Length: 221
Image (cartoon, rainbow, N blue to C red; front, side, top):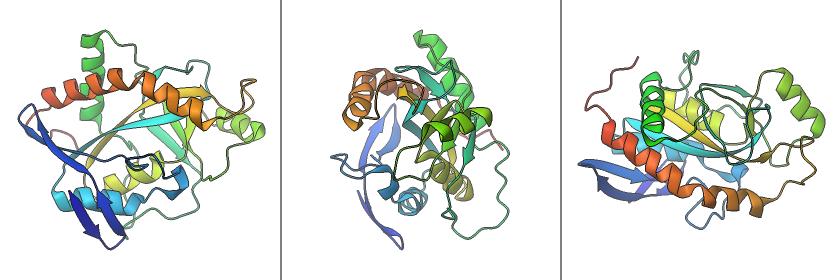
């Protein structure tokens, strides 16, 4: 499907699963050629809104900050802290972001992870960093003091715009590595990508189970 928006054109795959119409959008592009700071968040969420999408189940690759979040772990986000200087909004003022992720979708993902026997951290705070550079060790120490469990560059803008657009949104993080200063390994995009690939089947199974279990009508705020 090709969707034209005022913020740019968006290409996504359209299909069906469990009797539901489903769209798949790789935020980094189909060849992963778009880096985090190049993701067109406004266009992506506007495209979903134009298609009438009511729920988004997202996957996110991020670095681990807290002791509980190690490479290969799955983390279900419930909060974020953002240092983005860009204003990610469609123009609506005073959007309530007290609970930035849909409680109904979160509960559904927790239930399906338990049913499948998957280890899932049921809460997690995402520190959304501006980029495009990686974080310093001192910045990671500061984020940790602020209560962050994982760090990345894409999720706060996405979650904020989805809320403003009236779309339920939930995100499962795959921890790809320990964040800067917490490991002797240097940040490496290939290692980051390889960890995602190793866990892709598990993530797909979890999301498909959640889609099957979705109630027909939304029951959240």
